[in-house]
Length: 62
Image (cartoon, rainbow, N blue to C red; front, top):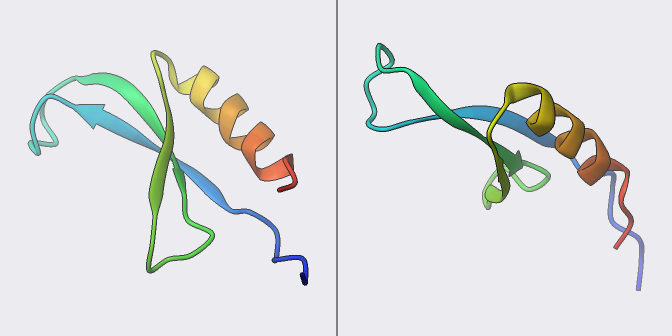
């Protein structure tokens, strides 16, 4: 099986509703390797935790 390209992840804030004025209640790490099929792969309390998790996710091989 050919190896797929590198993983790409981003961090997005979680709000209680779609209103940008509401406070952030957490952070998602989103796998955006396939832009047609983005998947939330983890949830974190702080942005720093989410950034670390995104970096680790991108380094993992499957």
